[in-house]
Length: 317
Image 1 (tube, rainbow, N blue to C red):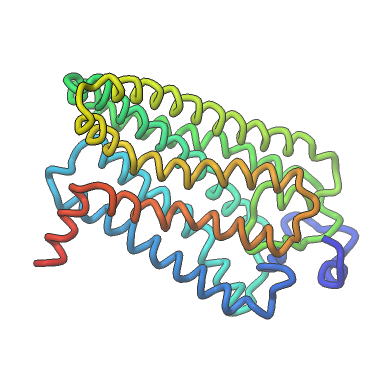
Image 2: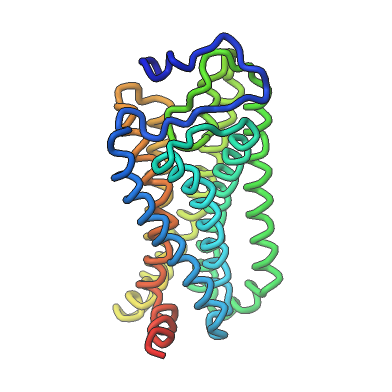
């Protein structure tokens, strides 16, 4: 983070609480308006898509089942996740409103990491739902009753909240005397920690622990579920049965790929890739953060026949 932009704001000490300066996309300031069009479009699609999913599921009694309840949890999570980032990002691009106070930064940081962990947990819950539906279809309605779905949702929410809770506390304890500039449009854990003038290995290690424990455990559980699902699918007698059963899982698999593969890649790149241009990294990570909220309702809306049919009926009427 060296350069003329940074040195203008350098000071020797920052009393707590103080104000951070968010740079947007450093090096591409002249293109901020054009970048904002992309981000704003993605955000609008995400809002409309997820609100539509919630509306359709609420209005259609035949969709009042575990799979669609988990889908509603995913929609709410995506709405909060995108809204925790985009309004401030757009205010930087449109109004050059770069300042954010310490408490607002910590709040944004907490919501970003909390709801990212929650989204991962919801994908695990959906994988469990698909496992029960395919491997134990006769027991699906007795295993995933409403109280069980509610308990799973509560567990996912508590896990996200508890795992993200140390992030703001760790960030708050470090002294800041290098610079108050964050070279991106939002507050993330490692972006803030890199500004501290202390031994911040505890923050870095905890961040890696969360990434690998959440992604590692969740992906392992999802993989185990799908191994059992595929075993059942391949044992079905006819090709039509196999295709029909597998199609019930395609939406979930697509959403998983959109979420996990870039998540792991960018988490590692942020920590270890030193040769990636800063503006490229910031731009790509921001696009990635908006991709799941934007694509999830499209994936489920297009691939899930019940949602698609209900939506078409509503539009026709």
